[in-house]
Structures are given as C-alpha cells and as structure tokens.
Length: 290
Image (cartoon, rainbow, N blue to C red; front, side):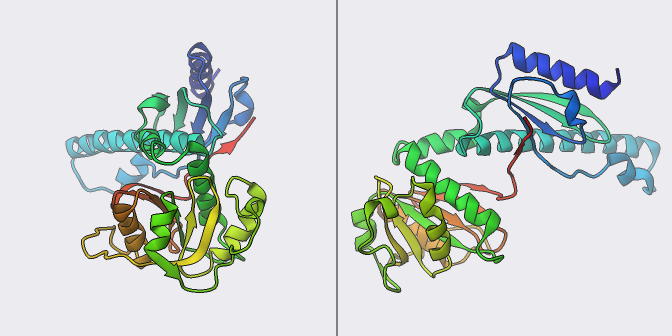
C-alpha cells in the first residue's frame, strides 16, 4: 500500500466517522481507490512544484530551506482556502448539504487532509446574511443562473449582466427601461426564476444592456432595465464597469441584493447596502465523481 492510498483511506475513515456530507479531492488521485457512499467531488487546482521552482536558484542552502518552508506554508494555505471555497460554492448550488466536509489535498510535494465545517465558512455565513433579506430559494436560484451565465455565456460569447433581487417597487421607481421590457405581459410561470425551464430565456436576455429586476417571490419583473442612481460615493474593484457600480448603489438606496456577472472573466459579485459582500471566481466548481 503506497502513501497515497494510506492518506485516502485515512480520509475516508475520518469522513465516515464524522458523518461528513461530502469529500472533496484536489490533486492527482486514482479515483478508483476512493470507495465510499459519501458523495465525492473533484476540484482541480494547478500548483507549481516547489522543488522545481528552486532548482535554478542561486541562493544558499539555508536561504533555499527557508524559502521551501515559506512556499510549503503558502501552498498549503492556498489549497485549504480552495477546498473551503469549493465547499461553500457547492453548498450554494445545493450539491452539498451543510455539515462537515473532508478535503484530500495532493501535490508533487505533500499530502494533507482538511476537515472543514460549513457552518464556519465565511462565504456560507455571507449567504445566510443575504437570506435574512431574500428567501434562500430565490437567492440560490438567482445564483445558479448567474453561475450558468458566467460559465457558458451565450452562443460562445462571454456575457455580463446583473440581477437586482427584492424591494421590487422601490427598484422599479429608481430605474427605467432602456428597451421594451421582454417580460411585460408574460404569464407568471414564464417569468419565475425558480423554474429552470425559464433560464434559457434569461440567458438570452442577459445579452441586453441593463439589469434584471426580480421580486421577493421570484418573479422576473423586467430585463434591460437602467438604474437611475447616484453612484459617486460607491467603491467597487478596479476594472469593474458601470453595471457593477450602479448595482451596488441600488442596494444602498433600497432593501435589495445585487448579483453581478463580469463580462471579462465571469467573476460573480454580490452587493448589499452599497457594499460588496463577496466575489466568486466562476471556474471554482467541482465535479461529482460517484
């Protein structure tokens, strides 16, 4: 039995003993050796080999040793963060249940087993804070559509858009149509964000300038909406455009939450009370293995 198998078996025993809700694997593992009834996910993350990085270095032996230790610590911290972020995202997407997650990390230089409680996860805590304002079902549905747009775009092109969820009357007062509203006159069942069959039309209309406005009940009230807000005191990350600024500003002036998708990079941002709560890299998704 090699060291990889020992680590994997130990992680599985831990996960089963802790009644974990999922195991997340990051590294070059033989998937066939992971035998368990617990859901197993694979999360890819490329890492540079620490030793290869230092081979050409002209530093002294002592300096190399210190740099190796520093880089091992940095790499381990990065991999742990990656497992924690993936756990939170899969929880948001309702792929993973709340509870304890066991991560198995492998690189060319080391192995590690991570035990992470989702209730302590910063990203999950932020989502629960949002759910005090918007129902979990509506918030997660909007997030799923945002991830879908972020990852697949439309007709092979990256698409940027924004969803303003909640306090719909005030949001509509503080905005106007840039184009004819494609949701005017549609039946409730055809504009319900909770119904997956409506997501294709959302992805189509996401190509329009402006934002989506979604009610507390999950009804898409409008697309192609322009937000009439004063955003001079709003601060967003450098490189983000007017859609992000106005989306953040509308959450300052109304009791709403904004979810934006960047056209460049597909990064998802969530704003509330005029401030960014978190941002999520679109590529951070896991693949279910069993």
